[in-house]
Image 1 (tube, rainbow, N blue to C red):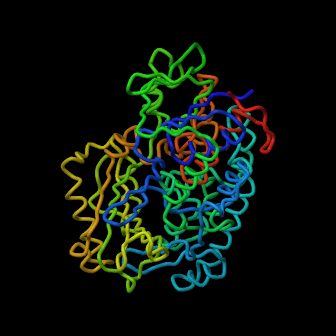
Image 2: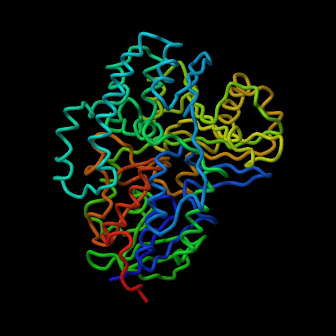
Image 3: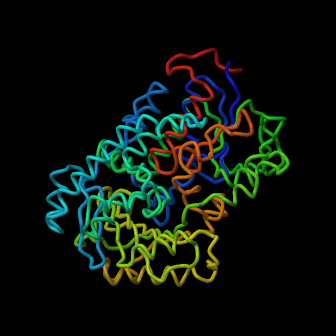
Length: 501
């Protein structure tokens, strides 16, 4: 039986679910509060520059292929992905670059430049991450709705040491301090501290090694546009600048939504791509919530937040040491991570991700110009930091650091700029406490212990996105869209019933 389905939010998880469900003939309506699609993948256009608002590291092209194939299309007809190698250029505190390559031989040659004695340990580390990948990859697009689902994987978690924190896990194999950081930074891509995020998330390392790292020509916004075009072809009704104020409850089910303008939209199923904690606290009235009470939501640990500065320059920096994806590490590592994730204080120092996509795709900037964004880890809004006062001084310190160390005469050449901080994540993206990646991926907040893809309280309410299983990061949120869609309608792709009227 075909159903009326509302999808709240147009991040990758919401769009993936909408496409899969529309391809099976359901009547899908997608509601987005902002003025264009994308959620965290929103693309800003400023003075002729295109800046990807959020995710920039694209891997596992097969996950995009599956979505288009579910609709009887080919991904290549909608967007172009180009491979990057090295995946990242990682700078130590002295500014020495380490190229993080795709192939083992290239990685070993790079390790040789830094510490030849670390090569054997790296080989053993990769052998273990391959074992973790082989054991747990089959579960990344499966729901964890029952305790039995969790118990099924626990023997392998214990056998492989996948419960250990990522940095400690790497340290078992690699003794060089800088290389330990190089091989354990991946949890930061999904909102976790390398000190605490369990090594089961080294799945990410092998996702990249197995499938590669890519860039979408035109930026991540090109992926959003491709999904938007496909939704239009499938008849998904997309409503922009349409904010949901409440999810309507009828007994143990949801019956639709009330919009900010007071109007109501009925539905048989609601798929929420909004932040899980925000959704329960602000869209579902307290009397209906038995499990996810405010107290329970406050008990959860949330990811750090971010300051991101998008900037374009009127000159190019082709003579710099920079690559497409750059990670700039600070001398102070563990202390910085603890400051950021404890929320106690805004650190004086920072480690940075610097995105320089015009090295790969000059079309996203005016001729002769360079496009960047720099991202700095900061505590979420549990911290007492007053961002109304701190945003500008923090920006100035960060940009001066880049000018002094990587981009000469930077500030004199900036011709486009935009900045976001934890207030953006809270107020624009509706992320509880301004957490950039929602629920933190700790051992006790993973798989079955994470908010479920099907609500534990309402039978026809589903969650996709960073705050639910399997977590944050583009592959994970795409997987959450697949999980939710298949829970709603397990009909195999290509088998269609009569379209709902």
